[in-house]
Image (cartoon, rainbow, N blue to C red; front, side, top):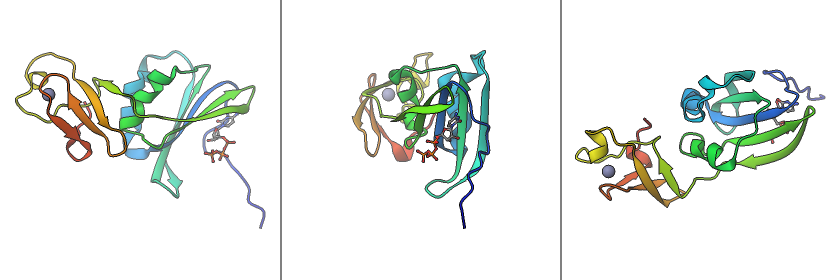
Length: 152
Ligand code: CTP
Ligand code: ZN
């Protein structure tokens, strides 16, 4: 039987499609990228079927092309995200997100005594492992790893 491809979210003319976001983290991605402050047209779908992720989400942002360092901020919550750059309705480039070397904000330090947990200080980490993400706090030097990572 011929497979028919139907888009659950309409195609866009120009912009960025972020695919393969774990459905449970869609709103974290929206928050990290600051999409709630954008004027451009944004469409998204969530709880879509994905063989790899179970349920995935997709975001389509018209007329927006991100800098790598901005988009890589979502690596902590959407490590398998795929970016598709669309020009004139065609996918002209595909990219994957990469865990950056440093992380500012986004994650909480797991050390309850860390200054970032009782004063208004933005968290800052050095990424000591990218595969099973593990972060070393700039302030208290304690390690926060994937199991105890809380997204702010
Ligand atoms: N897309 C879009 N608007 C376009 C072209 C593509 O929104 N004008 C979206 C598609 O819906 C898809 C993604 O961009 O979610 C990638 O498109 P394409 O490479 O054609 O799809 P697939 O081959 O299924 O991608 P993948 O690499 O994820 O398998
Ligand atoms: Zn700390």
